[in-house]
Image (cartoon, rainbow over all chains, first blue to last red; front, top):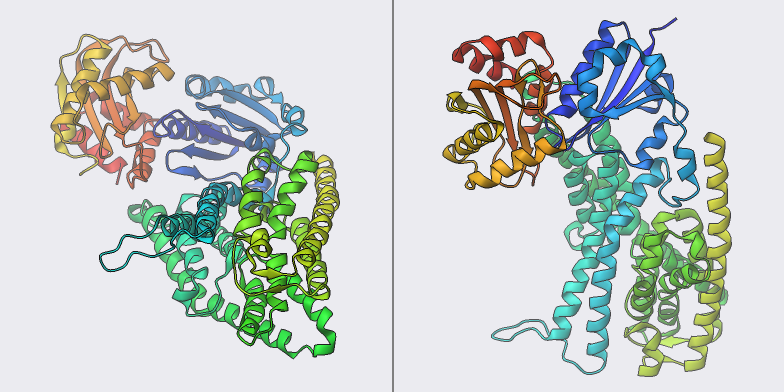
Length: 479
Length: 147
């Protein structure tokens, strides 16, 4: 039979001394007694030697030597294990005694089960945990930025000057609000990618993921018509995260090992993923967008309603990414030739996802996390006036049900808009455009909008409900 | 700013209490240019000590703090003119100090070196040098631990 094994986690208030002293003591004393030992340190330079699911599964005993506690989601890892939990200083003092009496010191660990039912949203596992880390970092950017933009746009529509600073001229207030708010939207995407990567690969992953996602979302830097949007952030965040996670295991000569996290990993990762983003992701997105525009243009005119459905679906799909941009570009380019009904679909569909998500949190709050409920009012306001972006965090927190609901409702709203002959001549402030004369006929617009909204809310409630239930069943099975 | 150098060896300092020792360490940090407010650093040491003793036994303590009152990570070594009460894990008074000060904000490239040093403290051959070695031997042992 293989050696008995011990896994341990150590942390301490400052994260610079006891975390490592105790880790070393456990390692030494455990190995001296013939155990295989793995110790995860949660110190000032981040989590190191993170325990793998495999290591925990095989461990006979778990030692938690904690100086600053441990979150419930972190504890869940040790459910049903024989656990010895004690303050870090006591661990240092009694390490020999503990090692000699593991069986009698250990207690079967099940406390976390009690918490499972009450911490909805925090018990996400695997990739979802990482996506949620991205969502919670990005939320304040959308909320703050969106509200500023909403105020700026409304001011501009009601006659306030919207001028950029020029020679000897100050910028107008509406322009400043729009610009500052716009920064929130611009930065939301790289922050999302950065924190997804950070959640997987820890601090060394943050900078390269931030920079690459920023690049991937900057059409002007890539020389393309479109940026990567939030799906780009997910792709880059996950791939950089796992890349760095693997990279951290590299063993270098002692003299330069300390450079790994702060110099070597960020440099190499940025080099690799920066070039990949520029030379692979950029062209792929440009190609995808072109292909989609060509496809839309090639649909014969007698299949107008089918095309309207597709445009609606695409607009709602990635909220600012290549698919959305292709549909927008197709619609907007026809405005120049005096065809307004495709751009009418844009006016109807782009306001629906954020408003629908907000309304769904009011009708069925139990399907959403506290943060999602808290941002609902600002999502609604921003969504109905200037931007689709507030729907992104909701989509990322539950991609399958939310995006499906948005896409289906977007497609149907597209058909409704086309069938009712909604026309749009210029962008304005969302659902108020018909009142400003930018969209007509007024009743048609609101009917199409209502159809899309009702359908979208209903689909969110049904699909997310099923999705959550499945996840809970899965979690219960694993526990 | 060097994490550790010859002038971080404070020799034997006059101290009749834990507070005296903290004052002397903080004064050294100011003298070395990593801190400007001696009293604030003393308060940081005391605050950490309240969370749990840093006297880990055998007459050695590792007073430390992660604080924005210092600009760079710094290691200090000192012996005390007489053993002082430290509420140590083994109850013994302390006469040998190895102190770590690290800035709170920003990632510090020295953190991983400090982690190596902390691990070293669990090795008897290393602590034996800290306790009984000459100044040169101690200096060398610490240099070796963090390189």
